[in-house]
Image (tube, rainbow, N blue to C red; front, side, top):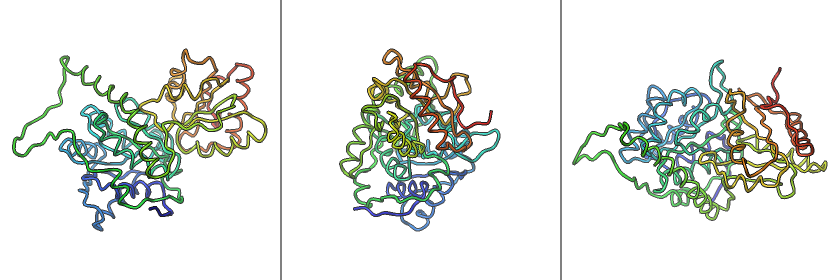
Length: 392
């Protein structure tokens, strides 16, 4: 039923796309995303998929083509990074506002300026409130499996929203790892046939559709997007459960580690959470009662699940690989602190780390662990946001 292949995170995404066999992929290359569509184009050229591959002149055009194909009733995918996502900005909001189930892996990379091709989360955080669902991956295995699940999530009749699958640039995208690949048939059975909600293009009765809302309907349509986002959380849990049962996995919207008797917890997204496991284990051996919480689903924000997981802790540290540049901390920190308001009196510390690909060292993580445990004992926190690993 499954084989183990040595794949980069990008290759794992491409392989998932091959098994999904979307009707249309419209894309433009950008580092470090390029090899996703490059590899997928090989599958197209070799006749392994019957996807219509559209190579366009820019990322803005890529998302525009995706909007057109999805509105016409085609299962549609693309991929991008950093400035490419920024160039899509206008059309990303249109995709969500038109309730189009497009799936887009985003290989997370810092936004300019200065120009930087390495990982942080500033690109996707720019569209965190656009109406897209955002899934975050810890490793190459998760990029493969989240891409498969993303199609089901996006196309569910209670959702009908676009989905991004986020993987850390170079750290996951270009690292070679052992990835368990499932046979084509069970994947295709899980994904199922695409049943579009509605097609805007009817060749027998053509119409022109202009998505223009003034005061009369705009508010209502934005509320519909918000309602779909709320409904999507239970849909994601149901699809996770179905995937877990079929393929023997343990996907959840959040994943707690060693929280049962912890005094303090570290919360974060992405590849860093894999490294954190080892250092939490080391801290436990030294008698330090620390745990962590990995957020897999960032939008919709799983507030109740997070509050339940963090209840009773004496201090919480939140890691952000993006800076909101607002003197009040990063985007994940803001959401966590808002979620805990009225539910917990524990101090919440924000650490901005890893911007532009800066390594988060073992020494840095141990300092975060010690600072958070100190806050658990004293109730006092470090100044926020705390920039860890930066030269002051």
